[in-house]
Image (cartoon, rainbow, N blue to C red; front, side, top):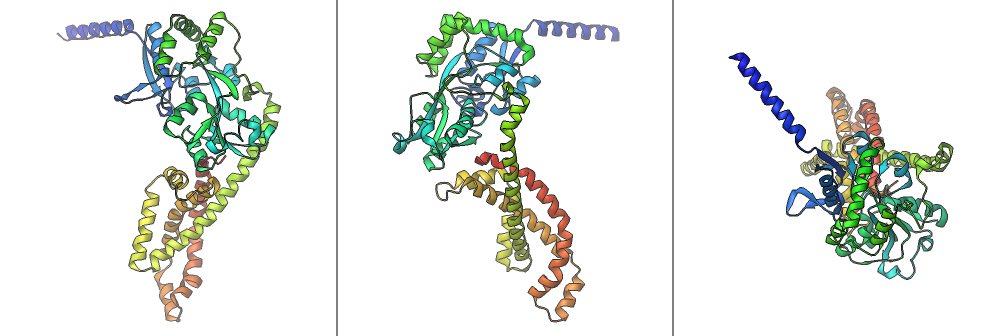
Length: 447
C-alpha cells in the first residue's frame, strides 16, 4: 500500500512538472510605478495592477515571445543595476538611450523619440530661452538622466548651476516657488506636469533629442535581438502607434524614427548637445573630471555634519536640562518633542522642512538640511545628556546644596562636568551616525 502511494505521488509530481514546462514562462520586466503615467503607474481602476505605454509594450513583447509579462517594481535609479544582477530580464520605464548604456548593457532599438525641453516661469519666457541665457542661474532636472548630463556640460560652458532631483514633480514646484529659474526634462514629462501644475512655459525648441529603449543585461544579447524583431514588426503593423496614440504621446517624430529603425540606419543616442558618458571616458579623464566635484562634496558633507552636530549638541543640552529642571508643562512639551522626533523618519522630517512648509517659509536647501539634521539629532542627544546627568551620584548633588550652591551652580560646577565625561562616547557614536545620515539631504537637492 505504501509503495502504491509513493508511486502515485511521484506520478502526480511528474505530471505537474510536465505541465509547468509546457506553460509559458513569465517575462520579468522592471519598471518604476512611482514614475507615473504615461510610462508606468498604478492602474486607477485596480491599484494591484500597473498601466502605461511601457506596460503595454512589455505585454506586446511578452505575447510575441509566447510568454506572459510579469512586472517587477524597481526604483528608477536602480533599474540598470537590477537588470545586471538578474532581478528582471528587461527594463522598460522611460529608460533613455545613453552612450553609457550602449557600452555597458544590451539595449533594444529606440522605440520612442523625445525632446529635452526647457521650462521657465511665464514671466521669464522671453528672457530665458536657451541654456546660454541661464548663466548664474539654477536649473533643475531628474538625476541620472540625459538632461542632467547636459546640465553638467552646460555648467562648464555657460556657468549655470545644475540641481538634481529624485523625482520629476518637485523641479516644477520649485520652479514656481522661485528656487529654480528653469527645468530641463523630456517633453513627455513637461507636458504631463503642465496639465497639473500651471504657471510655467515650455519652449518647443529642443535642447537635445534622444529616445526610450529597453535595457537588458549584456549576456542577454540573443533575447535583445528577438525583442528588436518584435519591435520592428510592431512598428510596421501599427501596434506601437496604437499604443502611443492611446496614451496621447504620438507625434510627427515617431514615424521618422520608425522609418530609420526599419531601414537599419545608425541612430546616435543623443543629438543636438554633446553628452559624454562616464563609460566612454578613459580612467584618467574620468578621474580628472569628477575628482574636484567629489572633493567639494566631501567638504560639504563635513561642513554640514559638523555644523548640524554642534547645533544638535546645544539644543540637546537645553532639552535635557529643561526636562530635568523645568516646570511640569515644559517637561511635557519637551518630552513630546523628543518622542515625536524619535518616532518619525528623518527623511520625512527633511521633506516637511523643505517642501511641506515652502508656502509659508521658503528655506534654502542647505539651511533646511542643517536644521533637519540638527533638530533630529537634538532629540537623541538630549536623551544621552539626560541619562548622563541622572548618572551623577545623588550624594554629590546633596553635598553641593549643603555647601550653599544654587541649582545653577550645582549644574555648572558639579553635575555637568561629570555628565560630559559620561556622554562623550555616545556623542561620538551619534556624530558618526549623523555623518552617514547626511547622505539623505540629497533629496533636498544638496549635492
